[in-house]
Amino acid sequence: MLKDRGCGELNKEHVGTSVTLAGWVDRRRDHGGLTFIDLRDREGIVQVVFNPEVTESYQQITSEARNEYVIQVTGEVAVRPPGTENTKLATGEIEVIARSVKILNTSKTPPFYINEDSEVDESLRLKYRYLDLRRARMQKIMILRHQVVKFIRDFLDKKGFIEVETPILIKSTPEGARDYLVPSRIHPGKFYALPQSPQQIKQLLMVAGIEKYFQIAKCFRDEDTRADRQPEHTQLDLEMSFVEEEDILKLIEELFTSMVETVRPGMRLLKPFPRISFAEAMDLYGTDKPDLRFGLEISDLSDIAAETDFSVFRSVIADGGQVKGISAPGCADYSRSQLDDLNRLAQSLGAAGLLTIALDSSVDSLEVLTMDMVKSVAAKFLTLDQVREMSRRLGAGTGDLMLIIAGKPELVNTVLGELRQEMGCRLELADPELLAFTFVVDFPLFACDEKTGRLESMHHPFTAPKAKDIPLLDSAPEKVHGRHYDIVCNGIELASGSIRIHIAEMQRKVFRLLGYTDEEMEELFGHMLEAFEYGAPPHGGIAPGIDRIVMLLAGEKTIREVIAFPKTQNAVDLTFNAPSPVSQQQLTELHLSIVEEQ
Ligand code: ASP
Image (cartoon, rainbow, N blue to C red; front, side, top):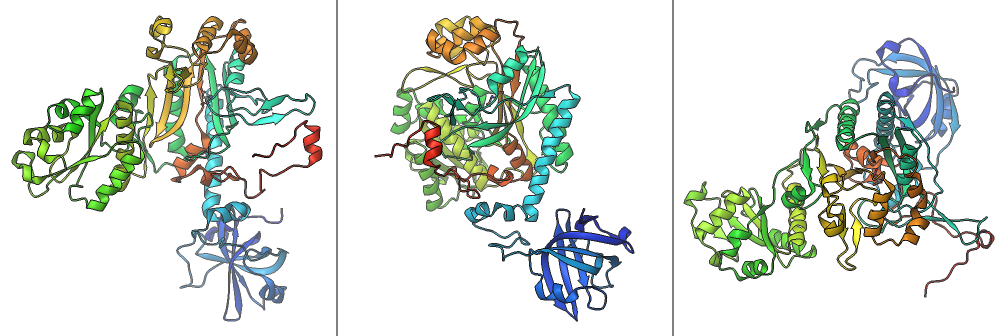
């Protein structure tokens, strides 16, 4: 190689040895007749001293080398003169006295600083991603990602899993998003779909007797550009035969626990991982992705609200609605504009409004509270006992602010779930070093589409119904629970999985409930139904998102930060400028023509 060591690897033990290094000029300083270059490579930075008396081609380096030039240096490792050590640098006790130097390549002035972790416009970073990735912060993330994937491979290998690659050009898979399609040149008018996940293929691998499969799999979903999604993401896809829910949950808990302990030993976990049912999660946290790093649980106040003279409460309850709330500790003195902000947030989520009740902090117990210490537009419709009872339910004390929403049950939960998240963030209640992994279980098998009234899979159509609920499939399918589990961490859904249907007749029944005709079933899923007739074993699996895991471990806020070449939120690759038009010849070969939008 053109180098025999990493710059950042050098230390006092190497003093007196000769080394050849190669890397990028991080910074250059000239003084006292000497030139100093901080030389950077993936391992870190070391100071190299160029001395006209010692260094061959000294002139060339001093007249030419600038930031980001690629150079090769051979020299001796020496202790820095006393008083010139740099405690901020891992190699700060030593320097390399250059004997010879060669410029391997020049560099234009980069569009942003590579040697600083300064704020840079994201589109510029994405256009020059190869320069962005050269920055120390991004290199650290790429290394962490490598460690995570390596950990997964080693862990699952020890547990007897084998990695199987599955095709990228397949047939459409129903995972709830839109497919990316690839037109076939050889079969005019026909298309492959890119897998939204290898769901059906991994199930076929179970029929094939693989028993324990995994893959670091690319998944493609043409989703609307919202939230933190990417057109392609990476999953740890796994599937096992002869298992029940508990086997998968135990495996995943052990995998995540030992992964965090290995790659991020400073971070803490809740052990064992809490388990919460879907219904409980919706009730207490207003979401099936609860952030358990803090409390602020939602409580039902409907019975108290029904007794008040507040007409808003009474009419919502008479309409079959609910009144629920949370307590924001220490927020009783929130200003008008802070309250308006929260009200706007509630309204943007569909609530008619947010009712706040502030409990004056001038007294220190609810027992001595009087009505003139209760600040709320509804105060005149409430008795002191009702306020006290609501406070007790919400765990609010004096000095706290109660946030109350009235409306349809689902809306109330959603809005309070968001308000809870917002207050947790404003009050910095979440410990940044805590990873609150949580299993969510007992999901309904189906959700009902409000507009069409049709049943939809809560997870996907291959999820098995719970055995005890099978008799309800014909009479009350909406009451059937699925053998579906999710793992959530710090409010982010990391994975969904389930025990699958492995009996063809049951699979047909579920497809029928989802509204597929027998012909559609055969056309779309005939291969699965047929496979199940050749001794399909009971099986189940899960598929955690690698990008999200690395994002949490790296303490980043978007998955774009942990993907080498991500797309923008608008699904554009700025480095390659994709998507882009193709030639007429390519279109003709693919039997395609472009219809301009009117
Ligand atoms: N294939 C599913 C998904 O991508 C996960 C699973 O059920 O294993 O969400």
